[in-house]
Image (cartoon, rainbow, N blue to C red; front, top):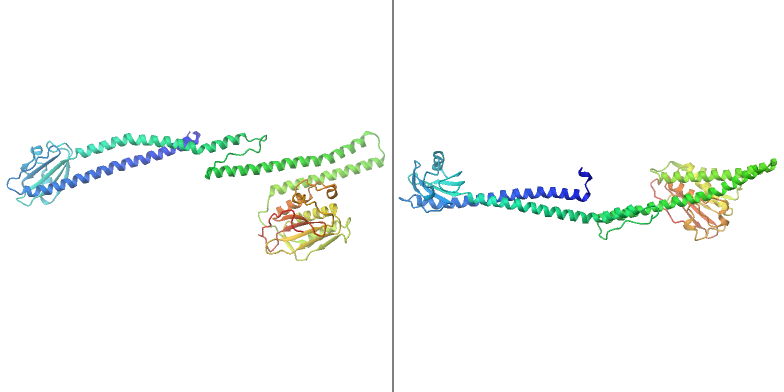
Amino acid sequence: MIRRWPLRIRLTAAFTVMMALVLLGVGIVTVTHTRESLDASISESLEHRLRDLQPIATTAAPVLSSGGRDTGEQVLDDAGQIIASSPDVADQPLLTPAELATARRGELVVDHATAGQLDGPVRIAAAPTGADGRIAVAAVTLADRDAAVADLRQELAVGLPLALLAAAVGAYLLAAAALRPVERMRARAATITAAHPTQRLPVPSARDEISRLGTTFNDLLDRLHAAVERERQFVADASHELRTPLSLLTTELELAARRPRTTRELTAALGSALEETERLSRLAQDLLLLARTDQAGPPARPGEPTPVRPVLESVIARYRSTLDEHQVILDCTPELTVRADPGDLDRAVSNLIDNAARHGQPPIIITASPPDTELGVSIRVRDHGSGIAPEFLPHAFDRFTRADDARTGGGTGLGLALVAALARRNGGAATAANHPDGGTTVILTLPAANHPDATIPDAPAAAPG
């Protein structure tokens, strides 16, 4: 039930309970301390009165002062008979036989409910005088002490609840004021929809926990908005890329089925449809690979050691049918090893060679450099084409991006994006730059086998060539 209360009510209730316990403790301590202080003061006063009475009690005919209804004095003989007494306690001895016996041996302090005409309770002090076995007895009423303590209890019984009420009201107002920025954030968050994705939570000017909470949530909203925009753009670009081959495929099939065709015409139509189908298949595989790399994120641990040269030679061998040995030049030492998945390395280098062959000019130079003290192994793929427009370099690894018709040809704009995604999945990075002597250099950097924990920073696309 309590969990359903508003937070400010729960905070106020918790503070009120805590304050009630604190005030109750303060009240008990105050009353106890006051009573003990009054007791100590009464005992000290009674002791002084007894000391003053002892010399008087040794005289032949002691004359005792009348203390009114607050104090009384007596002088008793060895048998407990009254020798002298103040008027208010003259009726009977103040000490019982047992107390009288104790007083003969030394000082005695006891409390009685009543004593003569004194207002009870009464505190009595007695001590021997040293003359003829006489006992000096002094008494003082405790009614004033009890009245003072009772008044204090009454005042605390009225004052502490009022203080508790004031503290509860103050706590409620303070909790409401402290939670007001949170309520504003909640109200603003309720208005953030897909139609208004750029709205952000109001952040208080104070640099406190709530301010940091609002800033953190705004940063989260920025990241979510950026992710949603990327996904939205990705879907739009993918739809655009899929529309062209699907339209061509539909057109070819419709034309082939419209009227009887010769074998040559049907073969040409099927060849064109197969080409568009293969393009759709490649695009679907690329999109699936990008989706998998986005979900996987960076590796939890370094991959297995993979020799670089065998993978590069295997990739180059697949291009021998279209590129002769003078158009692809490999410069890689045999002992060079990286920590990466062999399949990912093969796919990334294949995309780089395909990108260089499609958009650049031979020869294509592939260079694998040994690791330095900070970075891993760098695999550079350079073509000798016209290069990439400088304004496009920062976006070279974005998905579905193309610089111009001269460099993009018939590609989908996913080649370099796949290279960057595969590099990130293996703890590496990819950069691109125009070479000073012409052409484009794309650099794939992966952790070296002897530096498995090396961090490859995300360098800008326009890295030095």
